[in-house]
Length: 262
Ligand SMILES: NC(=O)CC[C@H](N)C(=O)O
Image 1 (tube, rainbow, N blue to C red):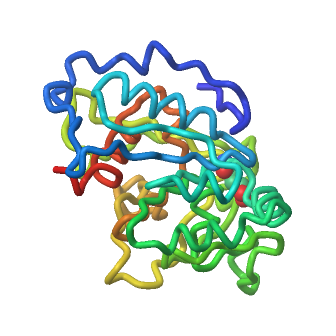
Image 2: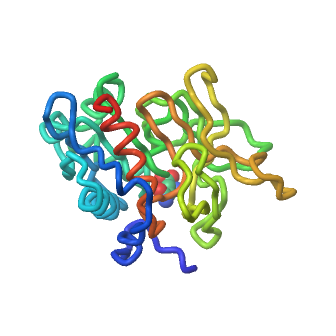
Image 3: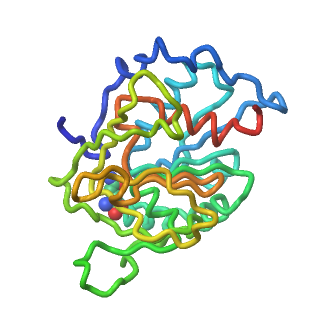
């Protein structure tokens, strides 16, 4: 499989409709407790934001979720959201653009708000982390990432570019059925592009490890941590919005955005 760059256009319409036999089709979550639709914002400063919008729209079209999806570029737009996705891209660029646009503070407030759901993918995970370090040999001293100002909402320490450069990007077929639920195809193609790893969980009482890759000897679940949850905050090292598979997005809507409506 050719790995697209985060900003490359990705066409995935066929795969987006590939769940015709999915058992979830019979259980659309289309009523909220207060009768109001929820608004999911996708931070659109840089990176793979358009793909997230396409995947959410596909879930909404398929299951009738009472959710609007919108791009977020200003504090006023952010304020109208119940949930926010910070996409993959380049965390240094996003830091700079957010600061220049006066959005960094509003983002920091939003991700700390216990009423709001948040999901960071790849660069977005780096921005959510309590601590972020640049890639460096294991022997080198840990230094904070030079040009990234993390929002410090997710109690993890991440290392940027931990798997190497763009050319070392890869797809790992992962079994996420423990939290996505059982579906016909268990394997989920997790796309890693200059991805970070979660090196340390700083608060194990609050942060649940959702997935670890296989270890160096191939043993499942003994390698790097690549997906975590801290209550209403989700962090993934990889790009579910490039997977030709909407299960992750549907799960986020059901579990994080619409959950209080069950
Ligand atoms: N695919 C990505 O989001 C890459 C993240 C990028 N390496 C960063 O540090 O921000």
